[in-house]
Amino acid sequence: MNAKYQIRFLFLGFVIWAAGTLVYRMVGSYFFEGSFAEYWLIVILTSVLCSAVSLGLMKWRRIEQKDWLQGAICIALPGMLGEIPILHSFSELMSNMQPETAGRYAAFLFVGYSSLIVSAWLMSQKANSLLVRGKQFIRIKQ
Image 1 (tube, rainbow, N blue to C red):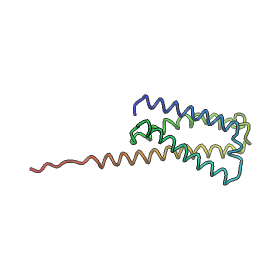
Image 2: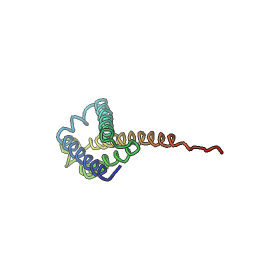
Image 3: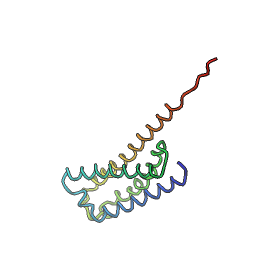
Image 4: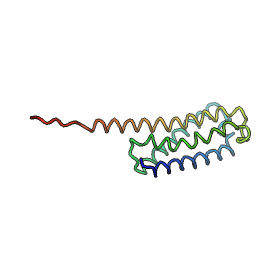
């Protein structure tokens, strides 16, 4: 993957993180302070959606599948780093949620970013193994 796409994906990751953080700042209590079943349904659906959208975007932009892990890291990294100060000052910055919700919020983030990175890693590994199998050595008979 070239540097242009790396920068674009880093920027996209920052935009997604900023938008998501603003949404959770406003209505996070509805997502994270419901029942146990509702919370895990939201976690799973969001993880699948984020992975599908990110990998679909890479496919749409014709990024080689062997480079999808690199793209996923570029998308996830801004949010992972951006959440450090948010989680550190959770009570002040996410005042619409109870302080005890910080753990649920952090687990949600961890599952989401992990799902994206693992799915991209698996797809990259699959592509790399196909590339290795596709390179066959030709024996010349003498």
